[in-house]
Amino acid sequence: MGSSPTRGTHLPFHAPLTNHHTDSTVCPTDHKHTSSGKPLHADCPGRSYTQAVCSCGGWEMKQRGKGYVNECRKRHLASRAQGPKVLRDLLRLDAP
Image (cartoon, rainbow, N blue to C red; front, top):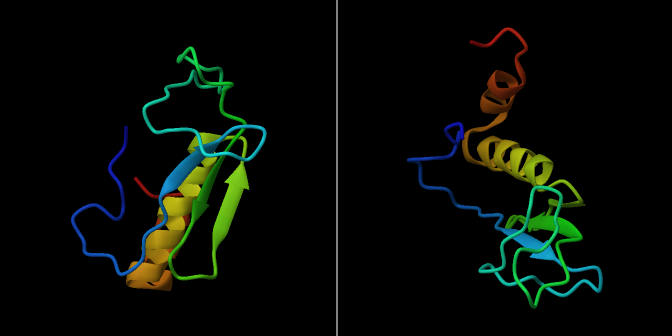
């Protein structure tokens, strides 16, 4: 797992990840899933999508891919915390 661009800094905004079932109910955090969303908990119907909503009020994402939502969430929070330069640095193709 790579380091987070937001680790170690105080952020005025937050965008927690939440997993949801097909009926849009929140899947409890103690329910574990395979990478494809299949449940590893007997009482769970499985993860249908992952959502992140930022406390800034202007950004949210809802997709089936948990990893994709998390990467977009990190980019958004970094851009809110430190401005456009951080976003440019994150998106550079020639970065080490």
